[in-house]
Length: 414
Ligand code: SF4
Image 1 (cartoon, rainbow, N blue to C red):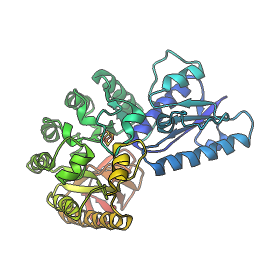
Image 2 (cartoon, helix red, strand yellow; image 1 turned 60 degrees about the vertical axis):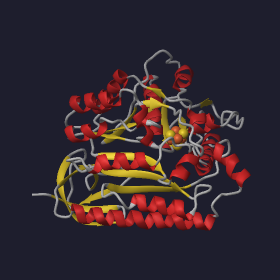
Image 3 (tube, rainbow, N blue to C red; image 1 turned 30 degrees about the horizontal axis):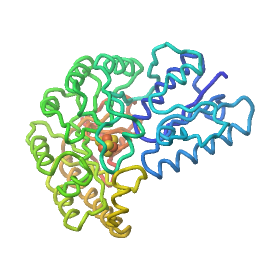
Image 4 (cartoon, rainbow, N blue to C red; image 1 turned 90 degrees about the horizontal axis):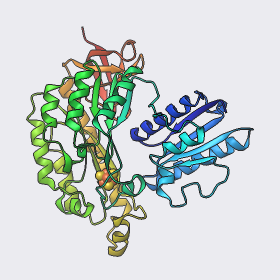
């Protein structure tokens, strides 16, 4: 076996795991192949958070096994959440799979490759990279499979996070996203942000997944004092009706959300907020939904709404309860609510376009012609298109030429 390729499905947290697996393969002397067809070893790092993700993972696994069957000396490793979700390890007993690794199981790959005992090094390239600050989640929200798949919340030591940041910056990253299932629960979060922003003043740092119940009181102060901490609050609020939030088991109510948002709105530096919400949740009445809509419409800082429908996931509290109570929201109603939120999201982008017109703001080039602003996470939010080429990785002050939907056109400011 001489070369490998990794296919990553799902979120940036999986990307970090893939980079650790890649580090082990490189440490074992394997060469990374850009073209998966030409590799001897394919690793599939899966997502299995909801049913559609499970289906996609299984489909890709089928493709990889076909690839293996079509050649000689080809190997397939199944990794990530799919094996974490199913007791049978997710492989379905398929003997063609050479190795199965659940979440956090990189030591199994190390053993398989014969490089056990070596420290895994996160290996990759690119303008923006991610570093994990914790594993797992202990919240047990009523609708979520993650705590079963990835285990309880375990923070990664601050020194080790700083090491990983130094590593990815050393490999050329110009923006580092700090990720975890529940970033705000890290007891040393603000200390970590303080250290990495000071150590690498020309690198942008962006914090992801701040659970409102664990919103760190000193985070707003850091948004003001650290210019290289992206003024960006990614907060999975999930809902704003007290009844729905309670049924979701989120551990906070609308008052706490309002208090956080009032603090953000009062900062001297504008912060772009991204909310993740779930609609069509069992028991969600018209009133609950209107409560969510009116909450979302209240905050000028809100820039992105990522809205998802509720998904009945086997093994969750809500799966059983909704079936017993028979109060799931009918599909067509859930669809209407989702499209109402999508229209609201569009109008919010429109307001931000008006707000940014005539202003100068920094944009990082991800490629010569595209990038992302300080207010937008790469890949997840609005993409900026430059009117003339820019060196990838550089940050340019721009003005907005036009904005529509999830794209904006920007011009280098004089
Ligand atoms: S906070 Fe809730 S929704 Fe998020 S991963 Fe943990 S259990 Fe799942």
